[in-house]
Image (tube, rainbow, N blue to C red; front, side, top):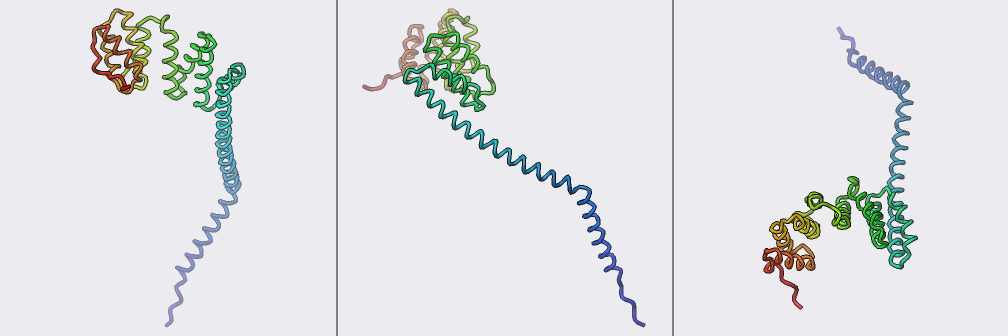
Length: 232
């Protein structure tokens, strides 16, 4: 006797497909609007981000060109125009542009003998943790140099301690001011040793090393063998 065809597998497969279609239709009906909105928001955010990045790059390029114009004006003696431009650029969103503008503004103030303003600008840069460290270190050196005579020796030493270390790019200048502060404290031996260390450091400018040799010698620390003047 013939067996009826087994329709169980075919039936189950059809039911499963219909169920998936129903679920997909219900999902599209319930969440389709949200999905479309999410895609639109994503595309808008991506476009906005790309535009913002391009805008910042173009603005930075314009500001660099402005800095070049500032240096040209300073070179020609037109400090009044340069000062206004520098004050505007000091509010730049670019950290490098802002730091350069502030450092240049402080240098112009020194040139104009406005040491109070120059010190304030250097202090502003040195204390701004958002600016790159090389700018902050340079500003701290200049600020300390301007304030050296009015600062207590221990304050000079404490302020420059991180920079007055062998291997630091500012070792020569920071070390020299630290050594001079040590002399003010009557610590001639320590000062002489620091000057000798400066004289031995070949990364320090030759003029500073030469001066360090002489001062070290006057303090009883022989550093003459550490520095040989360039051949004529």
